[in-house]
Length: 168
Image 1 (tube, rainbow, N blue to C red):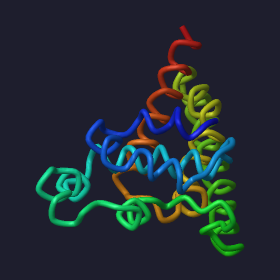
Image 2: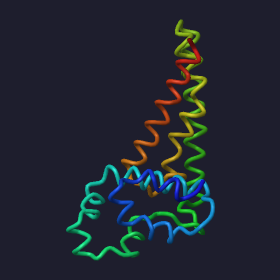
Image 3: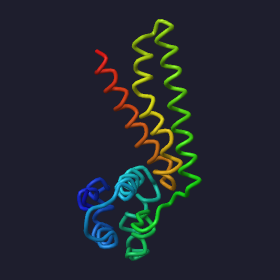
């Protein structure tokens, strides 16, 4: 995915103030998965954060003068270095395996207890829900909590809706 495409996710005032410098800092070429997550998370944070909204007001631009250092303060993207350690990855893997086992077990018990649709949904969603639960420990580590909540919440809602529609 290209940075220019993801830049459209940011608020217009943010794009007008930081867009060119942001793209120059990221550089040309396709982005990796971590950079895509960083940019989407940054866009969500730009929409939800009062600090970002204040920083893109005309008074703030006049006071600070804008500039590349402001863009770097908002950016989390770093092409050369992961923000998570082996320990973080192991914690994420443990959360993923544990949550998968728990959700699969609960789904199986629900099916056997007369709740076949609920049990089937839990079993079908167990891996994906576990993946979402593990993301804050590794893939989304360091992202703003609001952005994590939006990304994870929307993903869980879409998966739940797809499972519901598939069961009809």
